[in-house]
Image (cartoon, rainbow, N blue to C red):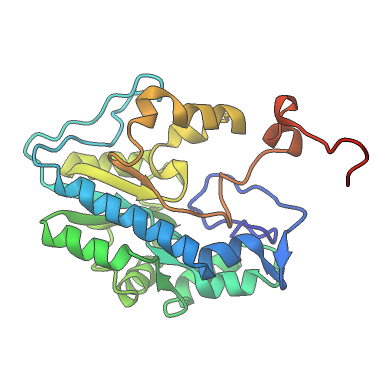
Length: 279
């Protein structure tokens, strides 16, 4: 997984940034400390899950939150619901499931490799935990008659193991091709829009959750600079979806969020330096 220790993300992201100078505290990357150990991260996650369930509970005349084919982020249009049954769609890794075992190994500075991640998918069934708030939220959604569907870039070759991992964490059921969609299910690789379209053809997707913008639309990963990407999520048409159909979980460890050189993160207009020789 790509994170603060120069390890690559699971295939939940299209491209993985490289962090050359990890920030560590007591030998643990700071992002990992926050996501996997802090009360603050647990609180943010529970907050997101509570908001998710609260939003879905109000959707008596639901509308889809899946972008229609040909839509743009500047002029979004949505798939139709008709009489299709309700569903909620989620990424898996660091959205409903914390990959504690893999990140423990990665925290030692191990470089990421696809064989190591595939080995984790096959064998890391028990060294995981549900994201705080996820298990209770998925239980409530199912009790409301909403089908819970997972759309992850874990490999279709490891479908049985991923089903077992999700269910061992108390988050299932997960059935490949029914409530679990994986990389390799279509010809689009790590892009999820094709799988989202397949799901939306069967269900009225009333809400989606993820830790990367690509969990909502592949259009977010269409080569934008960090500044342009940040502006896009704040544009009026898209800003209206956050907390109202689209819900983001925190992930400072890896993924498409971890981009931007120092000059991009801190443009000239915001730079400051101490005065009068103060250090």
